[in-house]
Length: 401
Image (cartoon, rainbow, N blue to C red; front, side, top):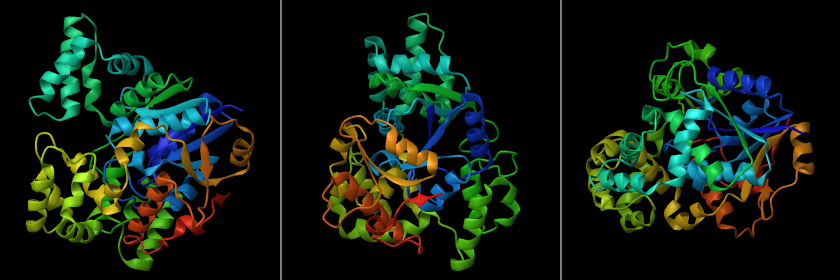
């Protein structure tokens, strides 16, 4: 059985995602397609506009056979750890291919950079440290270090590749395939339409970012043709019930209360270093929205995305878990969200790596720290999405399609 995984967030699923799914199935001639899906929170520190089971349903109706949730310690982390968690999970499930979109559209130039970042030659590391000491964001330091490494070693490197969001993730996927010495075969298709961060909604293939920004105006009817049919229906029905769409700012009041009453806990977050917690505590006192809070806390080293992740992690309760040690371990426990007959066959017959566990519902005596972190995520998300039972992890079974 020829299997392929797509690592995805689908926040929300739009026509560009459907293009990727169809292209993958047609060009790789696969038997089973598996989604490694971020759940109720996403990598850049955002709240998912649809809950994980709604996104799972959209996946199953648009070509996927099995949907597995990426554990939240990886789903809500930097590109490096996000990729490590997803690739290690795909490897442990013995999935044959991974398919991802990239602005580059070719594996070879992406892999050339991935090998350098994996091997970290001494002169590259020296240059990287030089730029880090200047207080620049890590991704900019890597670009500058790669430039110098390419020039000094007479290697033709297209360092501009690292300026694009999907290329960055693609390189991290390839780097982590090398890191764990995996047999996963990578496949990429060129991203079409708007860039990842584009806010232009009128593009033929708009980004998920532009769709979420558009929904702040509460007008969904005029982007019906940009969304998957299922997501349009689910979002429309949610708005009819509650009169709003899920937006990141909905966690601000909870975050503000927590920061003002449990300020010392902030330092337990792995990303909260170099005195940033004092700046965050000062900013929260004068901020009236999540956007105000993050913008007033930004610095050269602390980007908007990194601060968004810190805010989201604190809202959930990451500070109560040993996240640093969890991120060093391969993803070995993951939640099954849904499947069809093909997906069921894969689950029953495909040999998994030792110590890899897939689960659906939890028992009340569960003590796994990874699973309990997922419970925390559900409880936090239930404060934002009125459809969600805070104890869903103990009650809800996978979607069988």
